[in-house]
Amino acid sequence: MNVCSTLLAHRSVGARVCVSLIALAAAAGCSQLVFLKPPSVPRRKGASSTTRGPAFAASTASRAAASSADADWPLYNRSYDGTRFSPLAQITAANVASLTPACIFPLGVKANMQTGLVAVDGTLYFTTATETYAVDAASCALRWRHRYDYDPKPPFDPNKVNRGIAYLAGPDRARLFRGANDGRVMALDPATGDELWSAVAGDPETGETFPAAPIAWNGMVFMGNAGGDNFSVKGRLMAFDAKTGGRIWSFDLVPENGVAARTWPQGTERFPKVGGASWTSYALDTATGVVYTPTGNAAPDFIAEVRPGRNLYTYSVVALDSRGGTLKTFYQMLERDDHDWDVAAAPSLVSTHGGQHLVIAAGKDGHVYGTDQATGKRIFATPVSTLENTDAPLTGKGARFCPGVNGGVEWNGPSYSPRTNLLYVGSIDWCTTIATHSADQPGKLRGKEALPWTGSTALRAPFGVNDPTRRGWLTAIDADNGSIKWRYASPTPLIAGVTATAGDVVFTADLTGKILAFGAKDGHELWSYDAGAPIGGGVITYQVGETEYLAVAVGMNSPQGWKLESPPARVLVFKLR
Image 1 (cartoon, rainbow, N blue to C red):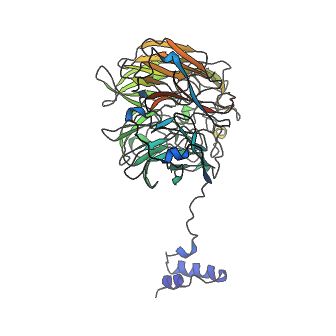
Image 2: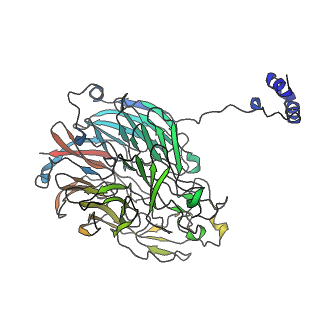
């Protein structure tokens, strides 16, 4: 028996002889010091619980007739191509004015309600930062509510938001998937709300959060991390096994290797290569198995001199092979930016009347982009927000630019109608003023882990100061050439979901709480309803039985980011009289 084996055979030797053993092992060249290492401990997990409501029995019983594919809205943007088009046509431009409330589900708490709504087989699903709800889609009666308490809590999470779930039917069972801001992705049973698995996806203590609405396809769940404004956080897209939560692959959206890595300066401990996160949702081409992710800004947000180059793959839509996580191509919308102009909204894949196959992207720079899916050629870049001082240098004296950091197109992107060949997008005019450190002041640019690393001179205003006034637009754009066909001027930003339907109606909502319906062809306002609270979440249509419904996530309590105080959140459901 050699020295190493002898040491391993005496693992119970007391602490008094540990030093001698280590010295002897080193002298003998022993590499088997496993017995000196602590065991691996899985990261702690927050507590979760499920509450059953009065409609729970209905959710577990088999239904007389399953809904058709057209009736449901199973993903954040309904379909894998991300076009947010509803094929339902019971509600039309001729009768939409007779919409009336069918039911209300009150959450009973204030929430930053940015969730997309999902409707499958007569059940509505939606989320807040820590809770997931299932309610009867026709009566709004609660089926179940799942609560998850973060552990550990993220050090910096001012928005306290989650943008929703993905539903995936499977050969064994259906599943719901969502993210949590303590660095997890989880699966829930759609019928019972029971947690099926919870997988570690990131580290909240570094500033990574997971508010995006994932998509799920072919036995996989696709999810990226947010937090790209924070020091040391890099964006990545990951694929998880839908049954087990095991990680299949992970792709760094700020690469360390290859040609793309050379579009950055060399990373250092003080100036790391960071950014490129995603925080809304994704699209997928089911014919090719390619998944598309938007990416955010590079950091520090407002000092481009620190990071010369194109900073790939930030400000882009990145296309990856869904099975192996390898790069297929990318479409960069901005080759240089120092305004925090993320490509925020999920992209969409549009086949136009003119025979083009386009990747549609919209971002906080106030443009809607149409790019040829095969060649990467830019077809159009249409401004949908007011542009001011976009090239003005950012300095220590302060500079104002429009759209600001909360301007342009945010988390709800364009809806496309194949009936009109138009894209419909909500946008924001809200300008920002910011003073920045100089790139030659490295001492002033020191980052702190898990906190914003933007370059702002104001510690309490890392993203600058927004104007006291703001407004919004709903714009209809020709999908073949980018020309504007009609516009609606809103007194508030338009950040809620936009949904075009086969009934030639376009639905959205504003921050005064006004739910709106427009004629898809001419933009004429056809109907409105005062919900009494700001709206920044999902606006969808679906069908239960023979009835088409409109559902809206109401209540956006965001006193910091959006300067909004809201009454308790609720979901409103409408149908024709």
